[in-house]
Structures are given as C-alpha cells and as structure tokens.
Image (tube, rainbow, N blue to C red; front, side, top):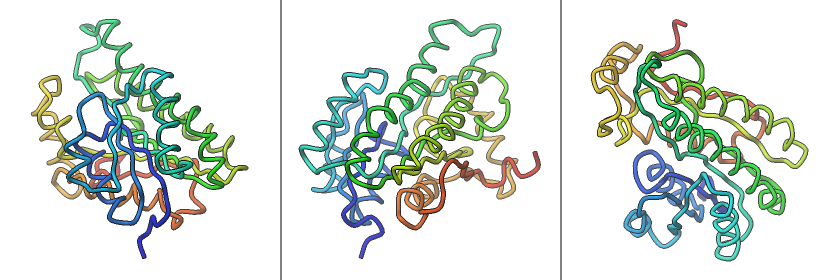
Length: 247
C-alpha cells in the first residue's frame, strides 16, 4: 500500500529540481500526478512513469490554471493534492532593484499561489478531502539581505496559507506551508542571479553544516500531502538543517 494510493496530485514548477523530486516520490507512493511548468517537462514525466503527465502552465495566468485543472480532472478525476512549488529567486540589493523584477517575483511567487488555491479549491471540494502544500522559504520567516522581493513574496505565501486554512477547513481541505533552507537545486546552485557564496555560507552555518537534498524536502511534502497529517493545517513546516534554530 502506498501512502498516496488513489490520490490525484497537481505540482507546479516540476520540470526539474524539487518539484520533480516531489512528483517522483508521489508516484512511487501511489498517486497519479500532473506536473506543470513554463519549461518543457515532458522528459521528466516520461522518466517518472505512466502515472505522471506534463502540462505546460504559466502560474501567473488565470486561464492557464483553469485549463490545467480542467484537463487534470478529465484525465484523472478531481484533485486531492496541490503543491504550489513554482517560484523564482533573484539576489539584488534593494537600492538596485527595479520595479519589473519586483513584479516578476510577485506574479510568480505570490499571485501564482493565490490563483492556484482559488482555482483548484472547487476540485478539491469535489474530491471530498484535500491537501494544499505551499512552498515558501525560510526567507518567509525572517529578513534576508539583497532579497527584499523574494522575502516579501515568501512572507505573503505564509500569510495566505493561514487565511486559506481557516476558509477551507470546513471542507476537509488542509493548507500548510513548507519553508526550506538551502537545498541543492538548479535554482540555488545553477542560477546566475543567485549569490553562490551566500548559498554556500548558509549551508555551512546551519546546525547540520550542509546543504539539503531535494528528497529531504520531498519526504516532508509527502507527509503533508498524505492522510498522515490529517490534523495539520495553517502551519509552517521548516526543513533547514537548523538554520533558523537560533533565531
């Protein structure tokens, strides 16, 4: 028996990195999964197997969300699990930040999560139960230098999570946020807009003295997606190697 047997999951930003890791684990645990991204994720879906399907999806567009939810229901049935994983991070001192960069962070990291919860909720209601997992960041718990736009949007994800948890609890839909520390993904390790030295220093300075691996976050997301977390909603779940333990 898998921990997600019979569940239908939608995971955004899953052509690679943590999203792909979540999808692979979900399928292993019995779920049927739709992965979405603005990048091509067909090869990722093929690698994961027959119970994984890729759909092109811009999380900032309401019409894309509506189409993806409709197509997912046609393919598999009502959605039980939504993982709002899509996001961007750019390092930029506040005095150098441009409006267009702030707006891009807002549209992907914040508006994308808002649209996802709003448009997916009717499908979760039809399913009769559900779990929404919003991927925030430890930057949604405390300030981070040169990341004002990223920090603002990740704080917003944390707040929206709590509000939606209060609204959707009556429908047996749980909403929680996950706050990763530094994880070895393309966004952190291969992104020219991210300060690599800052990333390495954050990894060295946490309690475990290392950067996390995607599967370590996927195991937490799996717990929140499964019925094992049936009494957990409106909460922050931190996986950061102890980065925030001393704050």
